[in-house]
Image (tube, rainbow, N blue to C red; front, side, top):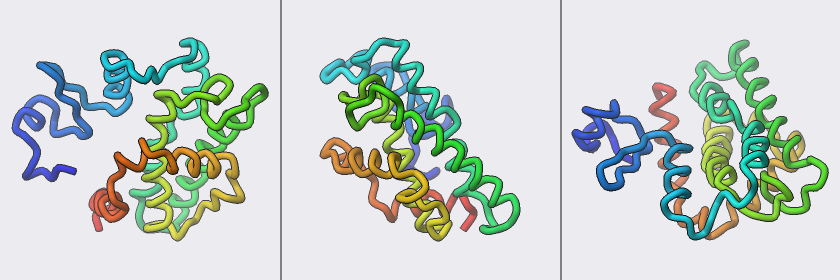
Length: 187
């Protein structure tokens, strides 16, 4: 990751230094989901939106608000106060929406959309967010959410996604994720 000192001037001047950032040709995008959609549109092998738009939109509802809930909970200090408990409950509610999506009728595969048989852009978007959550829960919140028992389908989903070579090849080391959240927490 880039620090304030190593970010290029164009990123700071025109995009407020927002990360992640994709600069392709003369265009720049700074939102993770927009970057993923851009890549899926222009570089279509493999196609990561193989299902109908209706199916993709329906499945994406389960992830709405997930990462903001993760960020608010992981950044909150002091840990264990009343606000922390509320933020934890909000994150648990967001995880519950994903759990429900993974438990729907007609799903035969491991993934979020349609029958769950094909990895999609939505899975690729959610996976790093779950990775950050899992590391942050361990590093800062003493594993306050028991994924294995409270959200077994989310835990299984994480295990499947995290075991993919395509996921492993793009991972930041755990220490880097902890460093980033430590800075966000003001540690």
